[in-house]
Length: 241
Image 1: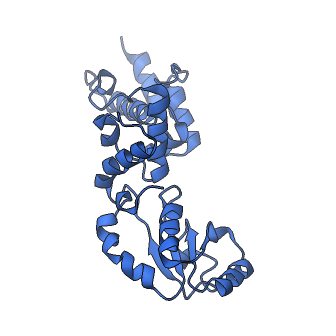
Image 2: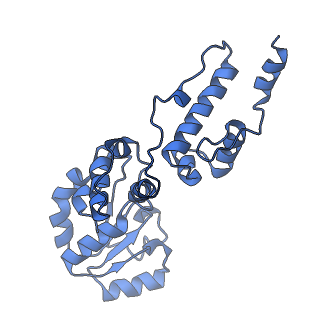
Image 3: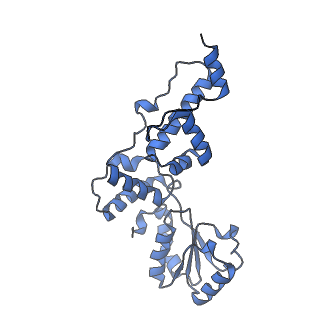
């Protein structure tokens, strides 16, 4: 289990750990899926000598109420903040704490990746692997490390020939098309072809991602474009001499 000091935001919330540990009432620990909520809750529960109710937001009000009666100093680990949870009434006396992500604290990602590598006895981790932007959670770093162990390949970094924009044309449609291709291919390479992660990086739905791949191809899986592109671009191509 990774040490808390490597989790995002430790420099901010680390000094408050003693206060969380000594809090008399129950705690509602929440954060993005895969951000280390369970890890943090387990560490804190061990220090407090209490139990943990994981995925608390998926439980019924009656189940949570019974659990809190038996665990008055227990920790409820969730991926939803308490204020927007349907359990707000039954867990109203919980002290809520949000665990940040690597998007909140990107500087912590390299150290966390090195710590995960040591746990896996994977000493030879290239600095370039830790330098890439993280999609925001601990699970993303674990997946990146796993892919490195299996493939021994780095995703192509920014500045490769594939990232260069073709700026010869003068019309906006062509440039937007080229920019779309560069961003899509960069996201696919940085996620080692994991399309769920690539969609998250781009901020699009999976359906939108597949439309982009049809238009520009997938350099990781070697798929060629099958869509000729938007109408405005096709019209320009037809009109060109």
